Length: 160
Length: 418
Image (cartoon, rainbow over all chains, first blue to last red; front, side, top):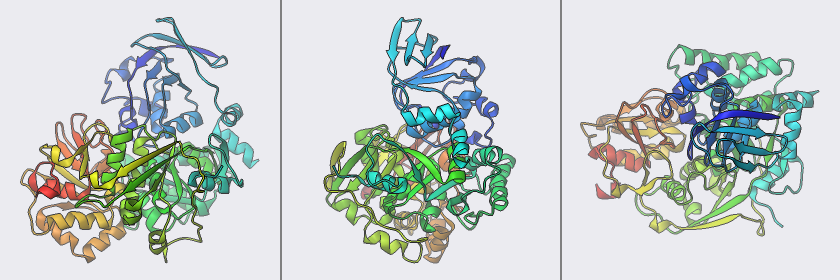
Protein backbone atom coordinates (compact mmCIF):
# COMPACT_ATOMS: atom_id res chain seq x y z
CA UNK A 1 0.00 0.00 0.00
CA UNK A 2 1.25 3.47 -0.94
CA UNK A 3 -0.02 6.77 0.40
CA UNK A 4 0.90 10.34 -0.40
CA UNK A 5 0.42 13.51 1.60
CA UNK A 6 1.63 16.96 2.56
CA UNK A 7 3.89 17.29 5.60
CA UNK A 8 3.23 19.23 8.75
CA UNK A 9 6.67 19.64 10.26
CA UNK A 10 7.20 19.37 14.03
CA UNK A 11 10.30 19.27 16.23
CA UNK A 12 11.40 17.20 19.23
CA UNK A 13 9.25 16.13 22.18
CA UNK A 14 5.81 16.96 20.82
CA UNK A 15 3.84 16.08 23.95
CA UNK A 16 0.26 14.89 24.25
CA UNK A 17 -0.79 18.20 25.84
CA UNK A 18 0.27 19.90 22.60
CA UNK A 19 -1.57 17.35 20.48
CA UNK A 20 -4.78 17.64 22.50
CA UNK A 21 -4.93 19.87 25.62
CA UNK A 22 -6.30 18.04 28.66
CA UNK A 23 -9.28 20.34 29.03
CA UNK A 24 -10.84 18.65 26.01
CA UNK A 25 -10.59 15.15 27.45
CA UNK A 26 -14.29 14.99 28.01
CA UNK A 27 -15.12 12.94 24.94
CA UNK A 28 -13.64 10.07 22.96
CA UNK A 29 -15.11 11.32 19.68
CA UNK A 30 -12.53 11.64 16.89
CA UNK A 31 -14.06 14.72 15.28
CA UNK A 32 -14.72 16.60 18.52
CA UNK A 33 -11.12 15.99 19.58
CA UNK A 34 -9.77 16.92 16.14
CA UNK A 35 -11.37 20.36 16.46
CA UNK A 36 -8.76 21.21 19.14
CA UNK A 37 -5.67 19.40 17.82
CA UNK A 38 -2.47 21.44 18.36
CA UNK A 39 -4.63 24.37 19.45
CA UNK A 40 -1.98 25.91 21.73
CA UNK A 41 1.05 25.46 19.50
CA UNK A 42 -0.23 25.46 15.90
CA UNK A 43 -3.57 27.27 15.96
CA UNK A 44 -3.75 27.20 12.14
CA UNK A 45 -3.61 23.38 12.06
CA UNK A 46 -7.30 22.72 12.59
CA UNK A 47 -8.41 25.01 9.75
CA UNK A 48 -5.73 24.10 7.26
CA UNK A 49 -5.18 20.37 7.71
CA UNK A 50 -6.40 18.26 4.78
CA UNK A 51 -7.34 14.60 4.73
CA UNK A 52 -4.24 12.58 3.92
CA UNK A 53 -1.76 15.08 5.35
CA UNK A 54 1.14 13.66 7.33
CA UNK A 55 3.03 14.77 10.41
CA UNK A 56 6.81 14.65 10.18
CA UNK A 57 8.58 15.16 13.48
CA UNK A 58 11.89 14.67 15.25
CA UNK A 59 12.45 12.65 18.44
CA UNK A 60 10.05 11.42 21.14
CA UNK A 61 6.78 12.30 19.38
CA UNK A 62 3.74 11.83 21.64
CA UNK A 63 5.52 11.99 24.98
CA UNK A 64 3.52 12.61 28.12
CA UNK A 65 0.16 11.21 28.99
CA UNK A 66 -1.47 7.91 28.04
CA UNK A 67 -4.42 9.66 26.45
CA UNK A 68 -5.58 7.73 23.41
CA UNK A 69 -7.38 10.97 22.63
CA UNK A 70 -4.08 12.14 21.04
CA UNK A 71 -3.95 9.64 18.14
CA UNK A 72 -7.76 9.79 17.97
CA UNK A 73 -7.55 13.58 17.41
CA UNK A 74 -4.99 13.07 14.64
CA UNK A 75 -7.11 10.42 12.93
CA UNK A 76 -10.11 12.71 13.29
CA UNK A 77 -8.14 15.53 11.65
CA UNK A 78 -7.44 13.29 8.65
CA UNK A 79 -3.76 12.65 9.33
CA UNK A 80 -2.75 9.55 7.35
CA UNK A 81 0.47 8.74 9.18
CA UNK A 82 3.11 10.16 11.51
CA UNK A 83 6.78 9.96 10.58
CA UNK A 84 9.26 10.63 13.37
CA UNK A 85 12.77 9.74 14.47
CA UNK A 86 11.28 8.16 17.60
CA UNK A 87 7.95 7.83 19.38
CA UNK A 88 6.99 7.78 23.05
CA UNK A 89 5.90 4.26 23.90
CA UNK A 90 2.28 4.70 25.02
CA UNK A 91 1.55 6.90 22.00
CA UNK A 92 3.12 4.17 19.87
CA UNK A 93 0.93 1.45 21.40
CA UNK A 94 -2.21 3.53 21.16
CA UNK A 95 -1.61 4.41 17.53
CA UNK A 96 -1.01 0.80 16.51
CA UNK A 97 -4.03 -0.36 18.46
CA UNK A 98 -6.41 2.11 16.83
CA UNK A 99 -4.93 2.14 13.34
CA UNK A 100 -2.84 5.30 12.96
CA UNK A 101 0.29 4.25 11.02
CA UNK A 102 3.59 5.35 12.58
CA UNK A 103 6.90 5.31 10.77
CA UNK A 104 10.11 5.48 12.71
CA UNK A 105 12.79 6.91 10.44
CA UNK A 106 14.99 9.94 9.86
CA UNK A 107 14.27 11.92 6.68
CA UNK A 108 14.75 15.62 5.86
CA UNK A 109 11.57 17.67 5.82
CA UNK A 110 10.38 21.21 5.42
CA UNK A 111 6.88 22.45 6.02
CA UNK A 112 4.58 21.49 3.16
CA UNK A 113 6.88 18.94 1.46
CA UNK A 114 5.08 16.11 -0.28
CA UNK A 115 5.77 12.65 1.13
CA UNK A 116 5.04 9.18 -0.19
CA UNK A 117 5.03 6.12 2.05
CA UNK A 118 5.25 2.59 0.66
CA UNK A 119 4.29 0.29 3.52
CA UNK A 120 5.00 -2.94 1.63
CA UNK A 121 8.52 -1.93 0.66
CA UNK A 122 9.26 -0.03 3.88
CA UNK A 123 10.26 3.10 1.98
CA UNK A 124 9.39 6.71 2.67
CA UNK A 125 10.14 9.42 0.11
CA UNK A 126 10.23 13.16 0.42
CA UNK A 127 9.17 13.83 -3.18
CA UNK A 128 9.76 17.57 -2.88
CA UNK A 129 13.37 17.12 -1.76
CA UNK A 130 14.09 13.89 -3.60
CA UNK A 131 15.13 12.21 -0.35
CA UNK A 132 14.43 8.58 0.53
CA UNK A 133 14.61 6.63 3.78
CA UNK A 134 13.78 3.07 4.71
CA UNK A 135 11.97 1.89 7.80
CA UNK A 136 11.99 -1.54 9.41
CA UNK A 137 8.89 -3.75 9.34
CA UNK A 138 6.88 -4.03 12.54
CA UNK A 139 7.74 -6.94 14.86
CA UNK A 140 6.07 -10.18 13.80
CA UNK A 141 3.53 -10.21 16.61
CA UNK A 142 2.33 -6.72 15.73
CA UNK A 143 2.10 -7.66 12.05
CA UNK A 144 -0.08 -10.62 13.01
CA UNK A 145 -2.19 -8.36 15.16
CA UNK A 146 -2.55 -5.84 12.35
CA UNK A 147 -3.48 -8.64 9.96
CA UNK A 148 -6.21 -9.74 12.34
CA UNK A 149 -7.59 -6.20 12.10
CA UNK A 150 -6.01 -4.63 15.18
CA UNK A 151 -5.93 -5.46 18.87
CA UNK A 152 -9.70 -5.51 19.32
CA UNK A 153 -10.23 -8.08 16.56
CA UNK A 154 -7.21 -10.04 17.73
CA UNK A 155 -8.60 -10.14 21.27
CA UNK A 156 -12.04 -11.16 20.03
CA UNK A 157 -10.47 -14.01 18.09
CA UNK A 158 -8.64 -15.14 21.21
CA UNK A 159 -11.86 -15.18 23.16
CA UNK A 160 -13.33 -17.36 20.44
CA UNK B 1 22.72 -14.69 30.94
CA UNK B 2 20.69 -13.57 33.95
CA UNK B 3 17.52 -11.54 33.84
CA UNK B 4 16.45 -8.11 35.05
CA UNK B 5 13.41 -7.52 37.24
CA UNK B 6 11.33 -6.51 34.20
CA UNK B 7 12.31 -9.68 32.33
CA UNK B 8 11.47 -11.86 35.31
CA UNK B 9 8.07 -10.30 35.99
CA UNK B 10 7.09 -10.37 32.33
CA UNK B 11 8.34 -13.94 31.97
CA UNK B 12 6.46 -15.15 35.02
CA UNK B 13 3.23 -13.62 33.74
CA UNK B 14 3.79 -15.05 30.26
CA UNK B 15 4.40 -18.54 31.65
CA UNK B 16 8.01 -18.55 30.49
CA UNK B 17 11.19 -19.15 32.48
CA UNK B 18 13.22 -16.85 30.30
CA UNK B 19 12.26 -13.93 28.08
CA UNK B 20 14.75 -12.08 25.93
CA UNK B 21 15.05 -8.34 25.52
CA UNK B 22 13.23 -7.34 22.34
CA UNK B 23 10.79 -10.27 22.44
CA UNK B 24 7.13 -9.38 22.08
CA UNK B 25 5.13 -11.52 24.48
CA UNK B 26 1.58 -11.89 25.71
CA UNK B 27 1.28 -11.87 29.47
CA UNK B 28 -1.49 -12.24 32.05
CA UNK B 29 -1.97 -9.00 33.92
CA UNK B 30 -2.75 -8.81 37.64
CA UNK B 31 -4.77 -5.60 37.40
CA UNK B 32 -5.96 -3.15 34.77
CA UNK B 33 -6.94 0.31 35.98
CA UNK B 34 -8.69 3.16 34.19
CA UNK B 35 -9.69 6.64 35.37
CA UNK B 36 -12.66 8.79 34.36
CA UNK B 37 -10.87 10.35 31.36
CA UNK B 38 -9.38 7.17 29.90
CA UNK B 39 -12.26 5.02 31.10
CA UNK B 40 -14.94 6.42 28.81
CA UNK B 41 -13.26 5.39 25.52
CA UNK B 42 -12.45 2.01 27.07
CA UNK B 43 -16.07 1.42 28.08
CA UNK B 44 -17.24 2.41 24.59
CA UNK B 45 -14.83 -0.09 23.03
CA UNK B 46 -15.90 -2.76 25.52
CA UNK B 47 -19.59 -2.27 24.95
CA UNK B 48 -19.18 -2.16 21.18
CA UNK B 49 -16.91 -5.18 20.79
CA UNK B 50 -17.04 -7.31 23.92
CA UNK B 51 -20.61 -6.94 25.14
CA UNK B 52 -21.08 -10.71 25.05
CA UNK B 53 -18.00 -11.34 27.20
CA UNK B 54 -17.96 -11.31 30.97
CA UNK B 55 -15.06 -9.06 31.90
CA UNK B 56 -12.33 -10.18 34.29
CA UNK B 57 -14.02 -8.19 37.01
CA UNK B 58 -11.62 -9.12 39.80
CA UNK B 59 -8.72 -7.67 37.77
CA UNK B 60 -10.44 -4.38 36.94
CA UNK B 61 -10.01 -1.23 39.02
CA UNK B 62 -12.06 1.88 38.25
CA UNK B 63 -10.96 5.15 39.84
CA UNK B 64 -12.50 8.49 38.90
CA UNK B 65 -9.94 11.20 39.68
CA UNK B 66 -9.15 13.54 36.78
CA UNK B 67 -12.31 15.63 36.58
CA UNK B 68 -14.13 14.62 39.74
CA UNK B 69 -15.91 16.04 41.62
CA UNK B 70 -17.39 16.75 38.20
CA UNK B 71 -16.06 19.99 36.76
CA UNK B 72 -18.86 20.43 34.21
CA UNK B 73 -21.72 18.60 32.54
CA UNK B 74 -19.51 16.70 30.10
CA UNK B 75 -17.19 15.48 32.83
CA UNK B 76 -20.25 14.51 34.85
CA UNK B 77 -21.40 12.32 31.98
CA UNK B 78 -17.91 10.86 31.72
CA UNK B 79 -17.75 10.00 35.41
CA UNK B 80 -21.27 8.60 35.20
CA UNK B 81 -20.17 6.25 32.42
CA UNK B 82 -17.70 4.71 34.87
CA UNK B 83 -20.35 4.25 37.54
CA UNK B 84 -22.69 2.69 34.98
CA UNK B 85 -19.97 0.33 33.70
CA UNK B 86 -19.12 -0.73 37.27
CA UNK B 87 -22.76 -1.52 38.02
CA UNK B 88 -23.44 -3.21 34.69
CA UNK B 89 -20.59 -5.69 35.08
CA UNK B 90 -20.65 -5.85 38.87
CA UNK B 91 -17.12 -4.50 39.26
CA UNK B 92 -16.43 -4.12 42.98
CA UNK B 93 -13.18 -2.18 42.69
CA UNK B 94 -14.80 1.18 42.04
CA UNK B 95 -13.78 4.15 44.19
CA UNK B 96 -16.45 6.81 44.48
CA UNK B 97 -15.65 10.47 45.13
CA UNK B 98 -14.95 10.89 48.83
CA UNK B 99 -13.81 7.28 49.18
CA UNK B 100 -10.81 7.18 46.89
CA UNK B 101 -8.64 9.82 45.32
CA UNK B 102 -5.92 10.08 42.71
CA UNK B 103 -5.77 6.69 41.01
CA UNK B 104 -2.14 5.81 41.67
CA UNK B 105 -2.30 6.68 45.32
CA UNK B 106 -5.46 4.57 45.63
CA UNK B 107 -3.85 1.65 43.77
CA UNK B 108 -1.03 1.72 46.30
CA UNK B 109 -3.11 2.38 49.44
CA UNK B 110 -5.68 -0.25 48.58
CA UNK B 111 -3.09 -2.97 48.10
CA UNK B 112 -3.40 -3.54 44.36
CA UNK B 113 0.26 -2.64 43.85
CA UNK B 114 2.71 -5.18 45.26
CA UNK B 115 6.11 -6.69 44.47
CA UNK B 116 6.34 -8.95 41.45
CA UNK B 117 2.97 -7.95 40.04
CA UNK B 118 2.23 -6.90 36.49
CA UNK B 119 -0.18 -3.98 36.57
CA UNK B 120 -1.35 -1.87 33.65
CA UNK B 121 -3.27 1.36 33.83
CA UNK B 122 -4.70 3.77 31.32
CA UNK B 123 -2.72 6.60 32.82
CA UNK B 124 0.92 7.27 32.08
CA UNK B 125 1.93 7.53 35.74
CA UNK B 126 0.97 3.91 36.36
CA UNK B 127 4.73 3.37 36.50
CA UNK B 128 4.50 4.63 40.11
CA UNK B 129 4.11 1.10 41.53
CA UNK B 130 7.65 0.28 40.50
CA UNK B 131 8.48 1.75 43.90
CA UNK B 132 6.95 -1.40 45.41
CA UNK B 133 8.86 -3.73 43.12
CA UNK B 134 6.04 -4.18 40.61
CA UNK B 135 6.24 -3.89 36.85
CA UNK B 136 3.52 -1.38 36.18
CA UNK B 137 3.13 0.67 33.07
CA UNK B 138 0.80 3.01 31.26
CA UNK B 139 -1.42 1.85 28.41
CA UNK B 140 -4.23 3.28 26.30
CA UNK B 141 -7.99 2.97 26.50
CA UNK B 142 -8.61 0.50 23.67
CA UNK B 143 -6.07 -1.93 25.02
CA UNK B 144 -7.45 -1.44 28.54
CA UNK B 145 -10.81 -2.63 27.18
CA UNK B 146 -9.11 -5.65 25.59
CA UNK B 147 -7.28 -6.44 28.84
CA UNK B 148 -10.59 -6.22 30.71
CA UNK B 149 -12.01 -8.82 28.33
CA UNK B 150 -9.05 -11.20 28.07
CA UNK B 151 -6.99 -10.53 31.21
CA UNK B 152 -3.94 -10.38 28.96
CA UNK B 153 -1.92 -7.88 26.98
CA UNK B 154 1.10 -7.74 24.69
CA UNK B 155 4.40 -6.36 25.90
CA UNK B 156 7.79 -5.83 24.37
CA UNK B 157 10.46 -7.02 26.78
CA UNK B 158 12.43 -3.84 27.48
CA UNK B 159 16.10 -3.20 27.91
CA UNK B 160 16.93 -2.08 31.42
CA UNK B 161 19.02 0.82 32.68
CA UNK B 162 20.56 0.64 36.12
CA UNK B 163 20.80 3.84 38.17
CA UNK B 164 22.88 3.74 41.32
CA UNK B 165 22.58 6.59 43.81
CA UNK B 166 25.04 6.64 46.71
CA UNK B 167 25.49 8.97 49.65
CA UNK B 168 23.47 10.98 52.13
CA UNK B 169 20.96 13.52 50.87
CA UNK B 170 21.29 17.10 52.09
CA UNK B 171 18.62 19.07 53.95
CA UNK B 172 15.32 19.53 52.11
CA UNK B 173 16.37 17.17 49.32
CA UNK B 174 13.78 14.53 48.44
CA UNK B 175 13.14 11.70 45.99
CA UNK B 176 11.67 14.35 43.68
CA UNK B 177 15.05 16.05 43.44
CA UNK B 178 16.76 12.76 42.59
CA UNK B 179 14.42 12.08 39.70
CA UNK B 180 14.51 15.70 38.42
CA UNK B 181 18.30 15.55 38.59
CA UNK B 182 18.40 12.25 36.69
CA UNK B 183 15.93 13.42 34.02
CA UNK B 184 18.04 16.57 33.71
CA UNK B 185 21.01 14.32 33.11
CA UNK B 186 19.57 11.76 30.68
CA UNK B 187 16.85 13.91 29.05
CA UNK B 188 13.14 13.39 28.44
CA UNK B 189 13.79 10.47 26.12
CA UNK B 190 16.75 9.09 28.07
CA UNK B 191 14.84 5.95 29.05
CA UNK B 192 12.58 5.65 26.01
CA UNK B 193 11.08 2.11 25.82
CA UNK B 194 13.36 1.05 28.67
CA UNK B 195 12.84 -0.11 32.21
CA UNK B 196 14.82 1.62 34.96
CA UNK B 197 16.11 -0.22 38.03
CA UNK B 198 17.25 1.78 41.04
CA UNK B 199 19.98 0.80 43.47
CA UNK B 200 22.38 2.31 46.00
CA UNK B 201 22.45 3.35 49.63
CA UNK B 202 20.47 6.54 48.98
CA UNK B 203 17.57 4.58 47.51
CA UNK B 204 17.70 2.02 50.33
CA UNK B 205 17.51 4.81 52.90
CA UNK B 206 14.67 6.64 51.16
CA UNK B 207 11.17 6.45 52.61
CA UNK B 208 8.66 4.65 50.39
CA UNK B 209 6.86 7.96 49.64
CA UNK B 210 10.02 9.39 48.08
CA UNK B 211 10.62 6.21 46.12
CA UNK B 212 7.11 6.52 44.68
CA UNK B 213 7.97 10.03 43.41
CA UNK B 214 10.98 8.55 41.61
CA UNK B 215 9.09 5.67 40.01
CA UNK B 216 6.16 7.98 39.19
CA UNK B 217 8.35 10.18 37.00
CA UNK B 218 10.06 7.36 35.08
CA UNK B 219 7.63 8.19 32.26
CA UNK B 220 9.00 11.74 32.14
CA UNK B 221 12.21 10.36 30.62
CA UNK B 222 10.24 7.96 28.43
CA UNK B 223 10.61 4.94 30.73
CA UNK B 224 8.32 1.94 30.54
CA UNK B 225 8.89 1.25 34.22
CA UNK B 226 10.89 2.58 37.16
CA UNK B 227 11.49 -0.36 39.45
CA UNK B 228 13.00 -0.24 42.93
CA UNK B 229 13.80 -3.65 44.39
CA UNK B 230 11.32 -4.31 47.20
CA UNK B 231 12.60 -4.45 50.78
CA UNK B 232 11.29 -4.57 54.35
CA UNK B 233 9.87 -1.02 54.01
CA UNK B 234 7.57 -2.32 51.30
CA UNK B 235 6.58 -5.36 53.37
CA UNK B 236 5.81 -3.11 56.35
CA UNK B 237 3.68 -0.80 54.23
CA UNK B 238 1.73 -3.67 52.70
CA UNK B 239 0.98 -5.41 56.00
CA UNK B 240 -2.80 -5.49 56.44
CA UNK B 241 -3.22 -3.67 53.15
CA UNK B 242 -2.18 -5.92 50.30
CA UNK B 243 -4.72 -7.99 48.37
CA UNK B 244 -3.66 -11.61 48.15
CA UNK B 245 -0.08 -12.72 48.40
CA UNK B 246 3.01 -11.54 46.59
CA UNK B 247 6.51 -12.66 45.87
CA UNK B 248 9.41 -10.23 45.67
CA UNK B 249 11.40 -10.38 42.45
CA UNK B 250 15.05 -9.44 42.16
CA UNK B 251 17.44 -9.21 39.24
CA UNK B 252 20.02 -11.93 38.70
CA UNK B 253 23.59 -10.91 39.54
CA UNK B 254 24.55 -11.40 35.90
CA UNK B 255 21.51 -9.58 34.47
CA UNK B 256 22.32 -7.46 31.46
CA UNK B 257 21.85 -3.68 31.57
CA UNK B 258 22.04 -1.41 28.54
CA UNK B 259 23.33 1.48 30.67
CA UNK B 260 24.60 1.98 34.18
CA UNK B 261 24.43 5.47 35.67
CA UNK B 262 26.13 6.46 38.92
CA UNK B 263 24.97 9.45 40.94
CA UNK B 264 26.44 11.08 44.03
CA UNK B 265 23.53 12.04 46.27
CA UNK B 266 25.59 14.63 48.11
CA UNK B 267 25.71 16.76 44.95
CA UNK B 268 21.93 16.76 44.51
CA UNK B 269 20.31 19.96 45.81
CA UNK B 270 16.69 21.14 45.97
CA UNK B 271 15.93 21.22 42.25
CA UNK B 272 13.34 22.73 39.93
CA UNK B 273 12.52 21.83 36.33
CA UNK B 274 11.97 24.99 34.33
CA UNK B 275 9.34 25.21 31.57
CA UNK B 276 8.62 23.52 29.21
CA UNK B 277 10.20 20.12 29.80
CA UNK B 278 10.94 18.08 32.93
CA UNK B 279 14.57 17.78 31.75
CA UNK B 280 15.20 21.50 32.36
CA UNK B 281 16.64 20.85 35.81
CA UNK B 282 18.22 23.71 37.72
CA UNK B 283 19.15 24.30 41.36
CA UNK B 284 16.25 26.06 43.09
CA UNK B 285 18.68 28.56 44.60
CA UNK B 286 19.74 29.63 41.08
CA UNK B 287 16.18 30.17 39.93
CA UNK B 288 15.01 33.65 40.92
CA UNK B 289 11.49 33.71 39.55
CA UNK B 290 8.41 35.49 40.89
CA UNK B 291 5.44 33.16 41.33
CA UNK B 292 1.67 33.59 41.36
CA UNK B 293 0.70 30.14 42.59
CA UNK B 294 2.19 27.33 44.65
CA UNK B 295 0.64 23.91 44.10
CA UNK B 296 1.08 20.98 46.48
CA UNK B 297 -0.44 17.69 45.42
CA UNK B 298 -0.70 15.04 42.65
CA UNK B 299 0.32 11.39 42.31
CA UNK B 300 3.93 12.60 42.38
CA UNK B 301 3.86 14.47 45.70
CA UNK B 302 0.42 14.34 47.32
CA UNK B 303 1.15 11.85 50.09
CA UNK B 304 1.02 12.49 53.84
CA UNK B 305 4.83 12.69 53.95
CA UNK B 306 4.70 15.50 51.34
CA UNK B 307 2.04 17.33 53.34
CA UNK B 308 4.16 17.06 56.50
CA UNK B 309 7.21 18.39 54.65
CA UNK B 310 5.37 21.46 53.39
CA UNK B 311 3.67 22.02 56.76
CA UNK B 312 7.07 21.97 58.47
CA UNK B 313 8.08 24.98 56.36
CA UNK B 314 4.77 26.83 56.68
CA UNK B 315 4.13 26.31 60.39
CA UNK B 316 3.52 29.64 62.13
CA UNK B 317 4.23 31.62 58.96
CA UNK B 318 2.14 33.47 56.40
CA UNK B 319 2.06 32.95 52.65
CA UNK B 320 3.19 35.93 50.55
CA UNK B 321 0.40 38.40 49.73
CA UNK B 322 0.81 37.91 45.98
CA UNK B 323 0.70 34.11 46.08
CA UNK B 324 -2.17 31.67 46.37
CA UNK B 325 -1.22 28.22 47.61
CA UNK B 326 -3.36 25.26 46.65
CA UNK B 327 -3.08 22.05 48.64
CA UNK B 328 -4.61 18.89 47.20
CA UNK B 329 -4.03 15.61 49.06
CA UNK B 330 -3.71 12.59 46.76
CA UNK B 331 -6.41 10.60 48.51
CA UNK B 332 -9.19 10.72 51.04
CA UNK B 333 -6.95 8.74 53.38
CA UNK B 334 -4.19 11.37 53.11
CA UNK B 335 -6.78 14.11 53.70
CA UNK B 336 -8.09 12.36 56.81
CA UNK B 337 -4.59 11.99 58.20
CA UNK B 338 -3.85 15.67 57.52
CA UNK B 339 -6.84 16.59 59.63
CA UNK B 340 -5.91 14.14 62.38
CA UNK B 341 -2.32 15.37 62.50
CA UNK B 342 -3.30 19.04 62.64
CA UNK B 343 -1.84 19.87 59.22
CA UNK B 344 -5.07 21.45 58.01
CA UNK B 345 -4.73 24.12 60.68
CA UNK B 346 -1.12 24.82 59.75
CA UNK B 347 -1.98 25.26 56.07
CA UNK B 348 -5.08 27.33 56.78
CA UNK B 349 -3.31 29.57 59.29
CA UNK B 350 -0.65 30.21 56.65
CA UNK B 351 -3.33 31.22 54.15
CA UNK B 352 -3.43 28.17 51.88
CA UNK B 353 -6.50 26.82 50.10
CA UNK B 354 -7.25 23.14 50.66
CA UNK B 355 -9.43 20.77 48.67
CA UNK B 356 -10.18 17.09 48.60
CA UNK B 357 -8.30 14.83 46.22
CA UNK B 358 -8.46 15.34 42.43
CA UNK B 359 -5.98 15.45 39.55
CA UNK B 360 -7.63 18.77 38.71
CA UNK B 361 -5.08 21.47 38.09
CA UNK B 362 -2.06 19.19 37.58
CA UNK B 363 -3.20 18.59 34.02
CA UNK B 364 -4.85 21.95 33.52
CA UNK B 365 -8.31 20.59 34.25
CA UNK B 366 -9.76 22.79 36.98
CA UNK B 367 -9.29 23.91 40.59
CA UNK B 368 -6.21 26.05 40.11
CA UNK B 369 -5.81 26.83 36.41
CA UNK B 370 -3.22 29.45 35.47
CA UNK B 371 -4.00 32.59 33.49
CA UNK B 372 -1.86 34.19 30.79
CA UNK B 373 1.72 34.85 31.95
CA UNK B 374 1.06 33.38 35.39
CA UNK B 375 3.77 31.32 37.04
CA UNK B 376 3.28 28.30 39.29
CA UNK B 377 5.78 26.31 41.32
CA UNK B 378 4.29 22.87 41.60
CA UNK B 379 4.97 19.45 43.07
CA UNK B 380 3.43 17.85 39.98
CA UNK B 381 5.20 16.01 37.17
CA UNK B 382 4.84 17.95 33.91
CA UNK B 383 5.61 21.49 32.86
CA UNK B 384 4.68 21.26 29.18
CA UNK B 385 3.32 24.26 27.25
CA UNK B 386 -0.10 25.08 28.68
CA UNK B 387 0.00 22.10 31.03
CA UNK B 388 -1.64 23.89 33.96
CA UNK B 389 -3.60 26.48 32.04
CA UNK B 390 -3.03 29.21 29.48
CA UNK B 391 -0.39 28.51 26.83
CA UNK B 392 1.50 31.58 28.06
CA UNK B 393 1.56 30.34 31.67
CA UNK B 394 4.59 28.62 33.19
CA UNK B 395 5.00 25.71 35.58
CA UNK B 396 8.18 24.99 37.55
CA UNK B 397 8.36 21.49 39.02
CA UNK B 398 9.78 21.11 42.52
CA UNK B 399 9.55 19.20 45.79
CA UNK B 400 7.08 20.07 48.60
CA UNK B 401 9.69 21.90 50.70
CA UNK B 402 10.57 24.17 47.77
CA UNK B 403 6.91 24.80 46.94
CA UNK B 404 6.16 25.77 50.55
CA UNK B 405 9.26 27.96 50.86
CA UNK B 406 8.41 29.68 47.59
CA UNK B 407 4.86 30.31 48.79
CA UNK B 408 6.31 32.20 51.75
CA UNK B 409 8.71 34.38 49.79
CA UNK B 410 6.75 34.83 46.56
CA UNK B 411 9.75 33.69 44.53
CA UNK B 412 11.17 30.27 43.80
CA UNK B 413 13.19 29.56 46.92
CA UNK B 414 15.53 26.89 48.21
CA UNK B 415 14.35 26.26 51.80
CA UNK B 416 17.99 26.23 52.90
CA UNK B 417 18.00 29.97 52.23
CA UNK B 418 14.97 30.84 54.33
